[in-house]
Image (spheres, rainbow, N blue to C red):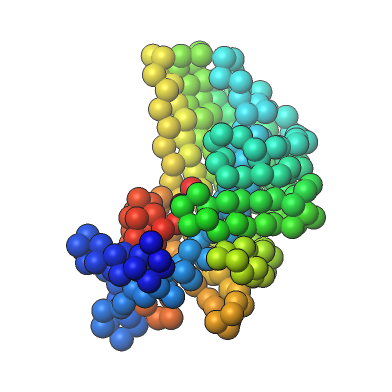
Length: 263
C-alpha cells in the first residue's frame, strides 16, 4: 500500500477510534501522507535511544539481582552489552556500560543509586519492524542517566524490585535511512521510566511506567522538520506536527494509525 493510501486509511481510523487531532487554533487537524511519514521518522530515533538505554539498565539490574537469592549490588559495575537479543527486537551493536554510586541494605531491603554512563562501542543500528526505518547511533556516542534500584526480599518466592531511570539528552545525533533517503538529525529528550518486578508465591508479575518530553529535528528533501512527542505513560502518547497534536494514543493505536513500532 502506498503512503498516500495508508494515510487516508489512517485518517479514517483516527476518526473511527475517536482519537483527537487538534490544531493550535482549536480546529481539527488532518492526517496527510507527509505528516504520517514525519511521525515515522521522529518515532524511530526515540525508540532507538529507548531500546539502548533500557538494555543498559537491564544489564545493571541483572548484575546484582540473580532472582534465586537476595540482591547483591556493587558500588561500581562495568559491563558489555550486546543488543542482538530477542527482547530488543531489531537492535544491533555493542554498548559499554559503567555504573557507579552508593549501595545500602538492611536485612531484606536495599537501595542502589547509580550514575550510569553508556557508550556506543560500535555503530548501534535499530530497525523499526513496522515502518522499516533504520536508525544508526554512531560509534562513540555517549550519554548518562540516573538509575535507582530499590528492593525488598523475603525469599526466592517473595520479593519486589523497582528500577527508576531518569535523564536528559541534548543535541543527540542520529542517522536515519527511510524510503531510500539518508537523513541526519538531533534528538532532545527528558525521560523518566520506572518498572517493577515482583514475585509472590511463585507468580511473577511486572509493570512499567514512562514519562517523556521529546523533540526530534532533522533535514530531509522537504526541508527542516521538527516533531514533538509527549508521553504521559506507556499508553498515553501525544505527537505534535506543525501545530497539530494527535493523541493521546496507546502504543497499539500509534502502530495502527501511524505505522510505527513503539517499544
